[in-house]
Image (tube, rainbow, N blue to C red; front, side, top):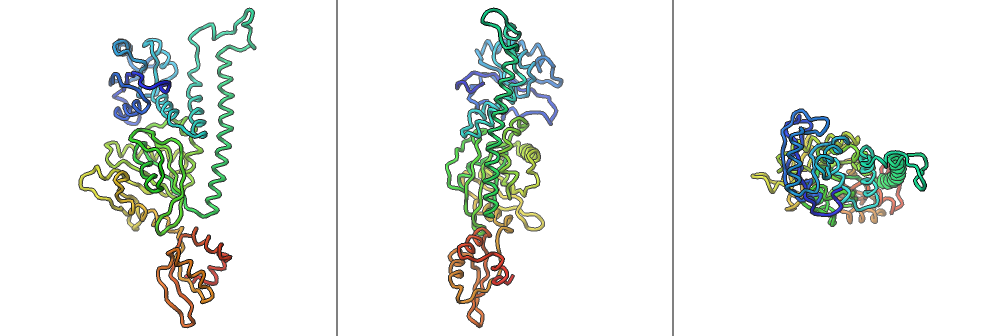
Length: 431
């Protein structure tokens, strides 16, 4: 794994000529390698329309690559494509250095970024399931049963022992993650009982999710201009003008052809998005790969059963575009569908909050209520919460209030006053 130490010299191999649906981005590939801590000794692009079964690339290119490894004194070769276990072994034997494919590279970055107990478990699970197909011994004496004094085993080969221990560890991790998943469900049900709307930040990696999260929550979640700067999910409570308290979750960034093992391992985390009331889909408005990145995000959302969740697209980095100012785009019904902002420059954030409040307006209680003079305490608290938009008075001295208040705040207020919501609707509300 690359994470053993920093500064390993790597040769990057990119295959050009693949079909569009499987083609990878060479620039993103280099960013992944740098994010993993590799020093790029050389980058080569190979035109190959028909990958070979033995090496993925042709034998002539393999020999050229071997000479390059020697000349550059490279520690490893990284392919911007998925390699089969046999291709990886064949390349390592011929090149006489470590070989890593795109999946292994992403797994290594995740291993470096994971900080929480849950995150580390999820990464380890994905790594173990990835290497389970790559277990093989180069020494033949370890791949058969051994005899002799002190060498008689329990009747299984070393390879079988490794696989048995690996299966046991996978089972243990899955059991622990199931406990974490249950804890998340309990926390989610608690928030639902409090009737607190939930918002989840999703998007391609390095689009500015954590920067926006820090801005909205006044937190210090790690944010950097690198792929997968944020891995562990963070949930914070924030206040939205006109809406009240909501929870905002920052999630791991997606990437083109995100390894299925990672999607499965992080399913408990990604459920925060699937169960949200609103998704903020962060998009790098300045990226030349913007459309492809949007497509990849929606594919992952579909895979985690979150494609039906209401989504607001947030086009970030508007400060890098010419003649584009922060603004809200609406659909034919006037509902916000897209907001253009700059999280780094803190531009358009009030527009984003406005759009969020509009989309979650069903979480807001809007009505005209009639309060008698004896209910002055309740009237005062409604004013304290800035819930009163207009007040008039009836002939008998009662206050007629037009109120707009988040349901969460209203429920708490009524609870504090000992008033049942049903009684409030029946006796006080006129609309």
